[in-house]
Amino acid sequence: VDKEELVRKLDEIVGKENVLSSDVDRESYSRDMGEFEGTPGVVARPGSEQEVERIVALADQHTIPILARGAGSSLTGAAVLKGAIMVDMRRMANVIHVDTINWHVRVQPGIALDDLNIELKKYGFFFPPDPASSYICTVGGAIAEGSGGLRCVKYGTMKDWVLSMRVVLPSGRVTTMGEPLAKNRAGYDLLHLMVGSEGTLGIITEAYLKIIPLPQNPDKRLLATFDSWDAVGNVIFDFKKAGIVPGLFEFIDKDHIRALNEKLGQNLEEAEATLIIDVEEAILTRTTDILRARGSTEVRVAKDQEEADTLYEVRANGLLAVKSLAPASMVEDVSVPLDRLGEFLRKVKLIASGNKLMIPVMGHAGDGNVHPIILYDNSDKDSSAAAAKAFEDVCRAAIELGGSISGEHGIGTQKVGLLREQLRSHDAEESLRLMKEIKRLFDPKGIMNPGKYVEAA
Ligand SMILES: Cc1cc2nc3c(=O)[nH]c(=O)nc-3n(C[C@H](O)[C@H](O)[C@H](O)COP(=O)(O)OP(=O)(O)OC[C@H]3O[C@@H](n4cnc5c(N)ncnc54)[C@H](O)[C@@H]3O)c2cc1C
Image 1 (tube, rainbow, N blue to C red):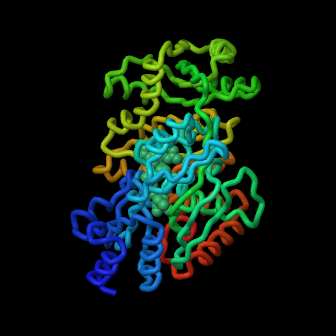
Image 2 (cartoon, protein in one colour):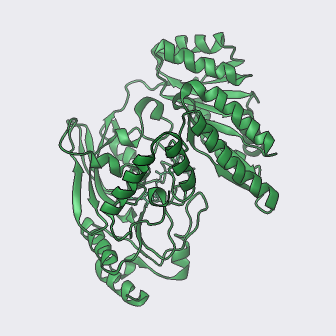
Image 3 (spheres, rainbow, N blue to C red):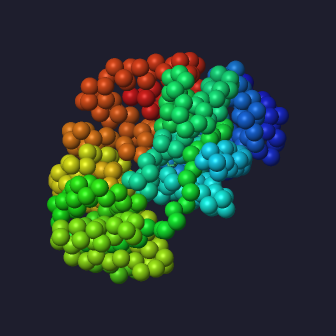
């Protein structure tokens, strides 16, 4: 089918105003937020599951590559594909039903997570997973990426909050996966196969998500500084031993704090390590006692919501601030066993000095998920080569310590080789073979977000 004919058929399905085929429009869908590129052939914006079904059936009939897109905020190349039919899901953004007895919400995939929470707040409920991009990222994108976030140390990631979903499969057929029930043991767990499938197995058109009541008393937020990472490691151990489960447990290094002071006009102590922690008021004293006993140079408890919000902004703006220190950057997302976090951070500093690069680190201390940010000059060949090497070295260091190359951002096209390395190194080669078979079973013509992730590994 030629492009004109394809556009005409899509016009029939979603209406002319919802088909974007001009160069300018396609260009606006050609990047994700990790700067991976691929201009789609055409963009369709469906308003219903039936329309998604018909678009996918069309792609199947003519064997045209197709992919869903939410906000395009992912960082690994998963949300761009040259020449494809791109299905922008953001017109399907309704909250269909909030169930305060069964504690779930039935929702369309195109709504942003923050907008979902604004709606749930009216009922006294909330949906905990909170990627730092929650102001734009969509329910569908967050499920497909298996996203995490700042509150996940207490509440878990997307996989823990999805009960059921409707999916248009690459064949154009539609199915339900899972049940909106607290317990369900009927058949293989296809639902969780879809979580983290990066748009390669089907397009999610609806989901039931678990929700919980908003806490009666908001946590207390505090900032603590340390002059060594070993001390931070000891705090993690002590929290675990004392059964302290923080609502938020983030760490930032000196480079981030310096960048925040210089670029965003903050006035923070430039300590080697800074922690931002939320805990229930009842255990606040126990928490601050541990921090002081482990040598914290400053423990500051936010006295009101405004100060608490400012501390959150420190963590949330850290990435933006360090990125402005260099012409280019690569954001890592490795996950390591908690008891090896200190060892891993020391290795990252060695990789930085060995490659003559700056690699600031921040991350989620409570679940061992680290975001080293590799800063480099993309106009300089040597600097770019050093950054590419450091990127792989950081992942390999995580793999060697029994960690994973991705805790939340996923694989896309960015880490396919490293995915293979991790699975090989952790004796999971046979699992990789099964994963490839699963992709073929779901998508025998290889049209849905092809050439990425498991298929390419
Ligand atoms: C500043 C910033 C901070 C971030 N912080 C975090 C963080 O804390 N934690 C974290 O996990 N990630 C984070 N991310 C990464 C990203 O925001 C998340 O992965 C997010 O969930 C992606 O949602 P999206 O709607 O933008 O999806 P997109 O980027 O549009 O798509 C991502 C993938 O999902 C697929 N997809 C989208 N919609 C559907 C659908 N309806 N059905 C099937 N597949 C679909 C796409 O095909 C693609 O493969 C961050 C990104 C930025 C830019």
